[in-house]
Image 1 (tube, rainbow, N blue to C red):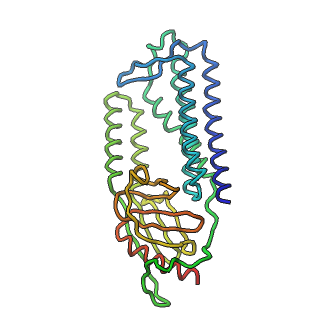
Image 2 (tube, rainbow, N blue to C red):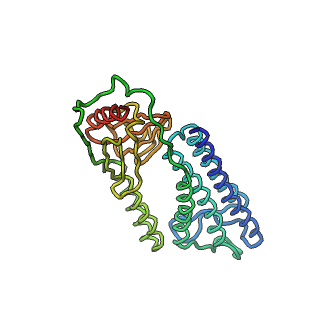
Length: 321
């Protein structure tokens, strides 16, 4: 069932992306008599273009970019889409790249209609901002359309050799930690500062919307509350979203693992790593690893992961009884 769901998400999100860029390609091709030859394809630090190419090459380059990235996202979803979190990431990423490609074609070439010489083309700051931000709308819709995971209680006991915490029959326990900061936040701060300086240097004030959005994203992705209680494991951003929950009766084993962000997850934040493992990766080092039913797993880099894992195993035992 899970493989079927993942493949359906890959197919409809990829198709949506390809339709978006294909429609844009048809529209800009219909403008060919109104466009200069060659067209401007790149702008440097100044307001004047510094790269030119034929209309056909420009359109083909954008379409190929969308196809290649959709294929990459599709491979991730097709083979490792056992978790709804992964499927939502794949759907949103595919649709966003299709919308981004369509926006590139329509806005960059639309700004050149009626010009005899592409060197006269100007690119307002709002063009880049809209090109990046506008595709977020269909991407969010795509993510919301992906169904969550079906409840899948374990049919076998928690691994016998998994660490546990001794609790009496009626004793309750809760483990709460905060996971935040790390190298990824530093990288994000540098990127945001660089974009602000670029917008100020170019006096393209509309570009400031991009670092503002990045700041919101980093605020959501680099501060989490991690909680283990009788219901299972809950990981939630300090701003309320995103978040995920692993029911106690789906836990097969909780343990501690060593995380290398670049090598295993390709970076920091809410990531999909090797084998489809979902990670809330804020730093290198010890992390809480939760293996659950359906071949799914979740990694969270958090302090005192050993205590959280042991308590989760104990509560998972209780959930079975």
